[in-house]
Length: 139
Image (cartoon, rainbow, N blue to C red):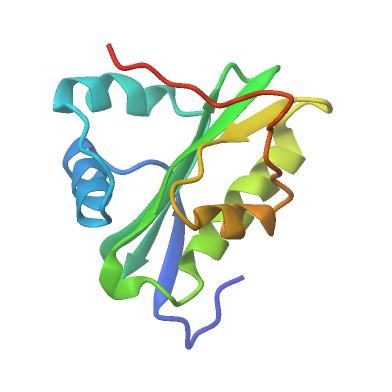
């Protein structure tokens, strides 16, 4: 529940393509091609955006097959709004949705950049090594 003094509003859904790309790049994350974003965003399992004075300042989403595997992705907050607990609020909303709707035993993963692993650990995420090592490849 949002306090009347809270300058931030959490909304369910994913942003439009331009906003998605802006939030990622302005937050220090890599850009993604507009065509790829346009194809991918509608396939999100769940997403949230954080708004300040009506403008989006943060986001996060969950992708996956809806049953066996899920991945938390694109969690970011614009630098001017960092340090105010917004990353935690995004993660709390994403993990609450998983707890409510994902099947018991579903595997949820994410990639933690830099010190973000400290935030994710607060929501029950643990490193996978040495049992597994995260890997990636770009097409």
